[in-house]
Image: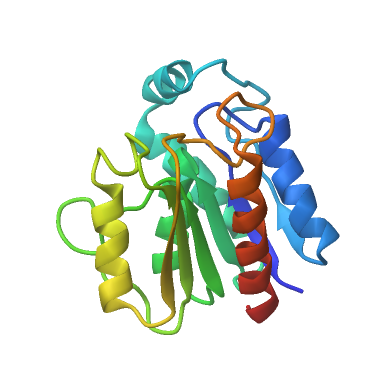
Length: 193
């Protein structure tokens, strides 16, 4: 059984994020899903990003990082889009990380936005759609490819489509087929962790 700390995307801790976590729990894993927005959810990504902007991106990321202080260090860190910020930071900087699951977003491991090199022995899976205007259009796919090229046990999975939040069953962007495949891959990853 893996222990997972999973961070939601910019629309908040939606029923779809909770359902995804429940699928992982049903497979025998323990999943923590903190609500970084204190119960708020948003109808659009832009509304959620505006809220994050009011609080401050760094402050919101650090809110997520502080959640880990209350949990054991041997965690798999997972994040959906905005949630990748605290998840990837923790995976790269908190000793004891068992792995990372990065959905729809990825930060580079070198350069300005980096938390530094990827830690040795920490496996990672990165998932995104091959025509997602955010994941592909804003360069996250390049960061993902940098990780895969330089890190042992790093995998990048691309799914056909252009949706950003494709694994959130509560949103119109949901893609059931892509999510089913993603879920199988994630459960296999967690079973190994």
